[in-house]
Image (tube, rainbow, N blue to C red; front, side, top):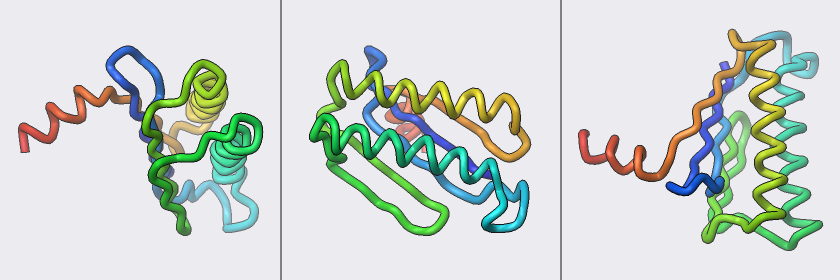
Amino acid sequence: MIRVTVWRKAAGPISGFQVEGHAGYAPAGEDIVCAAVSALTQAALLGLERLLGIRPAQFHCRRGNLKCLFQPAPEREGQLILETMVQGLKETAESYGTYLSLKEITEAELAEDSEEV
């Protein structure tokens, strides 16, 4: 299963996201769920970088794992690109929920979870 986590500031702007795992819907090279997630996330990153000049403060990419954190969170145009990515991921998760999960958390929720551990 692919697990996507989207981090938001308390007021709602997206400050980063992480994609982990493999869908397992079909063999490698034929997996439409993996292809959809890859296309959505890569298109968002390309739009941010090439159209707006926004690069993640932290970027980690290796097979089956992509993590991007933005400091500060992108402004309006960047948020539109990121929100479009999230909407595409939500639609994909609705159709292929067995193979893709999407979780959105605020930084405050993340801090609370850290304190409980």
